[in-house]
Image 1 (spheres, rainbow, N blue to C red):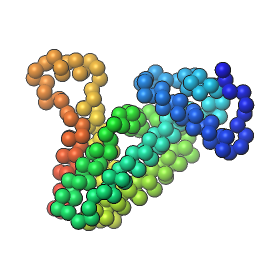
Image 2 (image 1 turned 135 degrees about the vertical axis):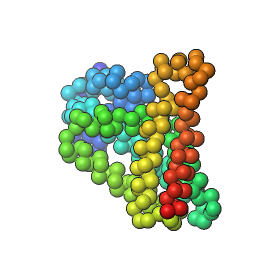
Image 3 (image 1 turned 30 degrees about the horizontal axis):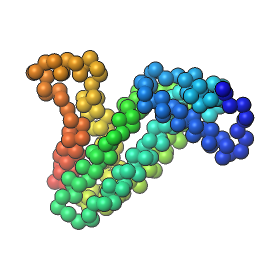
Image 4 (image 1 turned 90 degrees about the horizontal axis):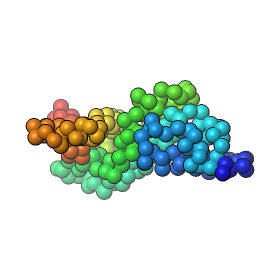
Length: 219
């Protein structure tokens, strides 16, 4: 049954907004993005469809807000890993690279959101929503990037956030290879000469980052 009572106070509106996001997240864990519509989300939340559109003008805007929440959880996890690294060690490059790679562990839905970030989620939202998301992400990653610069002292000011952005780009690309569609997986499993296409995500990302960081350090 749809919820009849209208949210009036800011805390009520925030609670309702979060309920919509939570419902979308539960659905996304079970279905592909294209299989989900605003009717599904409204039904899962117990709200009228029109109510969901008062909080999110489009499905893309809703899932972009969901991406922001999941990126915040990812960044917090990464920062905890970085805090545990020693300030001085000859293994810091490997430590930072492995922290970045391990931060995606057990986050397959985040990887799926990242894969549709540019090609889908930012295709049907207004200027204000896009600017808010990008401004938040820039500020958040600059903060985490500074933590990387403290540990990798060969990095110039501002290079830490560049490392994180390159990590996201690498992660998206490697994930496409590491988790191919079902039909492709069947082909790879049935053909013995297809081994070159088996890509372990974490190991490949970690080694790519080590190579990149060593290249920067040796410049």
